[in-house]
Image 1 (spheres, one colour):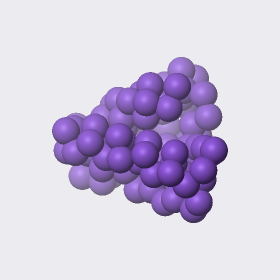
Image 2 (tube, one colour):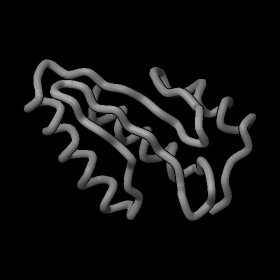
Image 3 (cartoon, rainbow, N blue to C red):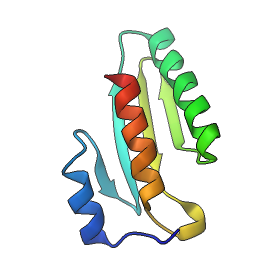
Length: 93
């Protein structure tokens, strides 16, 4: 899978609310009511990511989840990252 150009990434991001491109990855932060809700969504995302064999860089502090997606093998953002971002958005909504 090839990395997308910066222009391609910015075009695709128009379809994703709350996601930004910087430092060669797409990023979002999600805030939940409490730690349990944040951790629950992390677990659901983890199962989807494992099925895709594509794993996010992420961190969790209490009720906030920070996610960064980049395809390390391709050296940048690919369609695979946008597919996982789409899954994240669908699980959160």
